[in-house]
Image (cartoon, rainbow, N blue to C red):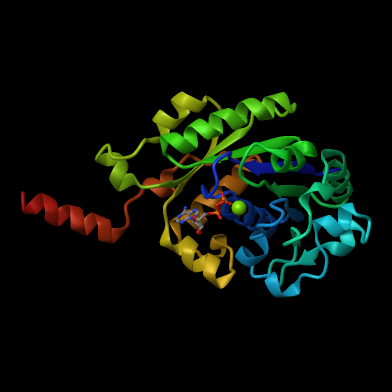
Length: 267
Ligand code: ADP
Ligand code: MG
């Protein structure tokens, strides 16, 4: 058996890579496949917090590449999602310990037993990026609907190609349909015109993500969250299901609908 290795990347920081890695990983694992997440953001680890696993870390990625411990032994299993495991990043150790060759070896080792290995990439285009993408066969590029993020995503798409990862998937995160309607935000088509890669999902801006992150419970476990639903749809698409795009995200909730009705009624 050999699983697929997917890197989640963006160029710009703060656009939702870690959120996407945790959410997609949790959604896939809930659907059945086994999933190992690797936090490659050395020095700025976050994935453990988003997954509520920060209190259970004994070993990390740098220990594994240093040969202190085997990759499988360093994994932390999720408390509630039994098919989900995490290889945390080192918090303070020297990042030069990791090289593309060593990352590839870690990814190869994990993919021998997991259906999916998903790597959370650091921001930027430096060594951390090159390490994170080294063992990956497929990439998910995350952007927000802002020109600065789109431009960085474009740069990253070029760099991925250079690293031999063609045809990455795109996730547009934190979209606000109220702002798009008022032409105050780029819409999905504007972003696609710039990036011209396959759209994997559109994730609404959703407070439930902040609540979920603070609780350390992946947002996909929240049945009511629109972002959670959108990430579950992304996971289903990765599994090859034909899920219509953005249907859930574009639906207005009842509150927005009532506000709009009043606004119209008042002329
Ligand atoms: P990155 O890993 O790219 O730096 P994060 O995943 O850490 O980005 O997200 C940055 C911040 O944005 C976090 O506080 C996260 O909770 C928030 N965030 C991400 N996606 C969304 C969303 N769809 N709606 C609301 N907040 C979000
Ligand atoms: Mg991050």
